[in-house]
Image (tube, rainbow, N blue to C red; front, side, top):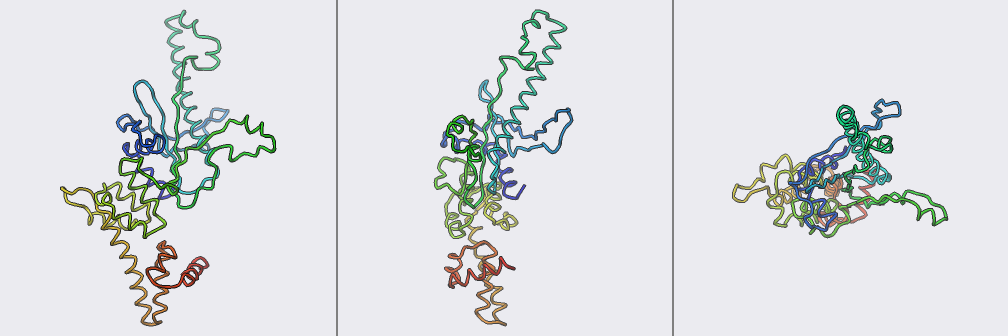
Length: 338
């Protein structure tokens, strides 16, 4: 699991954030899911082969799974964190959901077998009430499963050009009737990089998603951090923002930006300002050292290389260093060819 996926997995283990994600993505911000009704239920699934032996190669892992218990109804909610485009995502999500339904079926069958053993000893009439079809099925006619809802949270910076439903992966030919007959399976896909409105979220998940949305644009990210909401972040949100925006070096200085007890939280605004200044100063320092020997042009070259390695875009570099875009692109190619 990559650093982005691991970061989001840890962050969404927080039930407040998890509930906020589902409420924002599925219910337009309406508070349908309450954090106090969630119960951690993450686990791996292992399918049995025909011989009954366990095949470890068929093991699959949910990123995050929680059970929502509201009254007498139980729902199963899951999140798959995705930092790159997966062209098999519909099948992958379907596989996870089917594995969960199979797990529930196994529980029902085990319960049914235990019931039969009890009735065999105690109640012959009740045993006779169990139908032949129920015995063959291994579950009761009245048994019901808990529905599963999965969100695929895409945190990558490239546009999602993969399938968004199972039918996107199919070839139906020229016969429309076959396509109409097909039982489709859509993916509940939420692409952070495609969003412009995050008002449906009501916890600090909102600040994290907004920051992730600016990951490729350092100047836009710097402007975002001027928002007062980033001046009082909790420690876990601070760390998540730092990792998901490729600013992990801030994590080592987190204590420096802790506000007093009255103000509370951690100041990401100040941290981002200093981080951007550090990037600039690092480049200028390297450029100055080499510039003494090779002149001003070589110093500029070093500054631009330094900024390219740190993810700055061409227009950002041209604005800050005051150089031509062609010069920047030439250096970008030299890095790729190195």
